[in-house]
Length: 173
Image (tube, rainbow, N blue to C red; front, side, top):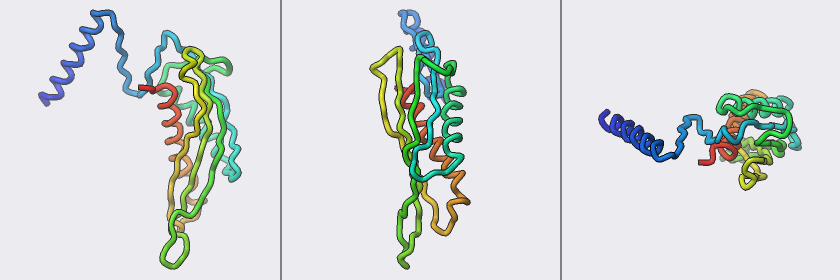
C-alpha cells in the first residue's frame, strides 16, 4: 500500500514540476495518444469483404467494431470525408485450414484466419502514414461445426484486429 501511495505521489510531483517548466503531459488510460489541438476528426471508410471465402455478417461486424472503438476511446469527430486521420482498406482473407491431425489420420483442430489490409493517412503528420496487413487466428475442435462457433470466433478475431489497428494508428507510445 505504501509503495502505491509513494508511486502516486511521485507521479503527481513529476507532473507538477513539468507543468511549472512549461511542458504538457496528458495521461490516457484508453491507450490513445492524440493531440486534440491538432487532430480533431477521422474518416473511416467501409472495409469491403474481398476474401475468397465469405461469411455474410463479417463485413458489417468489422466495420461496426472499427468505428465503435474510435467513438468510445477517442474524442475524434467521425466525418464522411477528408478527416485529419483517414482509414481505408479491405478484408483480404478469411480461411479455414487443418491445424493438427489425430492419430487416426483425421483433422483434430481447425484454424480460422482473418486478414485485413489497412491504409492509414495522417494529414497532420504524414510521416505516420502506412499501409499494413493485420491478421488474427482462432482454432476450434474438428468435432464442432463451423456454423456453431463461427460468430464467436469471427468476433474475437475482429476485436483483435481492431485493437491492432487502433494501437497502430492512435496509440503510438
